[in-house]
Image 1 (cartoon, rainbow, N blue to C red):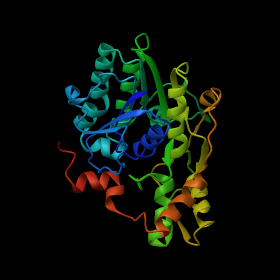
Image 2 (image 1 turned 180 degrees about the horizontal axis):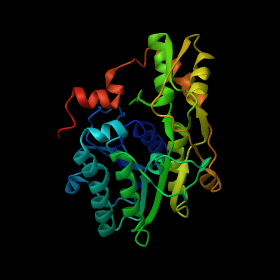
Image 3 (image 1 turned 90 degrees about the vertical axis):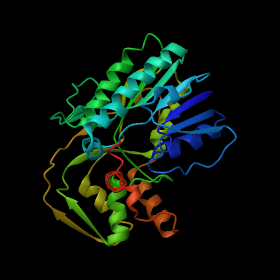
Image 4 (image 1 turned 180 degrees about the vertical axis):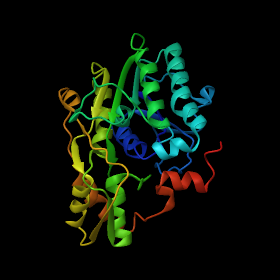
Length: 314
């Protein structure tokens, strides 16, 4: 299959694209490459450096499936420049969907976010709950979802709302909870936990990327699906890290007491089976760090990197 992956040079794309290539797909990766490109050359991989806001630069001829990962990722980054966030994460998605319909693309897989729910009192967050996004990032994801669902008569639309992702990628992110706590233990010799009782959903990056492939293989799975298979407190994650690294946990107060558990029964009912857990992510990060393949670098923290390189004014 000929697949276009937008944002393919990001954290998830660097794990997903090699898997797609291994399966024999022909992949075009379209990415602005703010954080670099670490994908290895491959006969079936076409790399295009470009801005998703420039819809005319995105080649769709012959494309059978779009996996749309591109966005201004996470709440703090989205709030740096709300106009840019709306242009990249919402408007560009609308334009891409419209162009896809006009040229006859039949499959559209969208990476939304579990954060579209906002703060919920319900013990289990299911797909039918009202969306109450708080940040610019959350709001753009909700709008993009609704736009894409309006194209369901024209193409297969598959939307995933992932939990917080963890695990190693060649384009690493250290600003997500499991990865951050593990790196703090490795580089600082201690873990600082804010609050700790908050329960948050998590998903291993291998499971999330396998899930996108599951959707490719099963076009009958349409609509919106949660994807988070471990609901764990921040303190429990920290204690899991200390099983592998003998460091001290320091607990301080938090101004973010939100606790919620994502229910992913709907996607599990399609036959998808996650293979990895949070603890696998912790072990992988420790191994990569000890082997010298991973360092605590600024480029792995989206907000710091965008501010340092003045990317938000573009």
